[in-house]
Amino acid sequence: MARPLVPLISIDALVTAALELVDEAGDFSLPKLAKRIGVSQSSIYNHVSGREEILELMRGRIIAESPYVLEDQQEWEAALRAIVRSYRDAFARHPRLAPLLVLQTVQDDQVLALYENLAVALRAAGFQGRDVVSAISTIDSFALGFALDLAAPDVVWAPPAQGYPTLTSALAHAGPSAERGEAAFDFGLEILIAGLQSRLQSTVL
Image 1 (tube, rainbow, N blue to C red):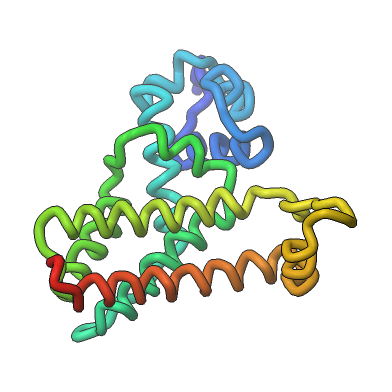
Image 2: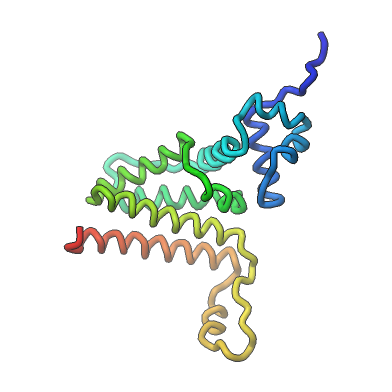
């Protein structure tokens, strides 16, 4: 049997190769992707429509690799913790992907399902209408912000020995980079949930 003129590729292989390029360089291009998997650039279009679809497939892949469990009759706060932590963990493996994904519309079904679960939890809490969207946007910014923090250098602040005594003192207690990031995420998540609780209890709603 004659060998095919173009090597056979799969969407999974495309997504894996694209993620590798992003992890290595912070971005990808179709020419580099074609070279990575050993095919012509034109053959990629037999499987996807272009860069935007590949980005959405990568978004769906990392969310699928970080599952979360929601229980029946679960308190909304617990549901939010599970979803937001899963979202953050998804980007922990590919922190350099986050800046690329914020530039385009969310279309992947698995990711939309995550946002649907967020909306359900917020509605169960008592939020209505535009406040549901506002809360989701706030949560999204929080999670993506910590995703970007995962790509930050080990030393984020480097004040000189003199001139910034309060900051220097605080940094002395921050601990190693990974420990600092995890503590900050837990701290921020609890503040976020407390803020949502306070909003529900206010007379503004």
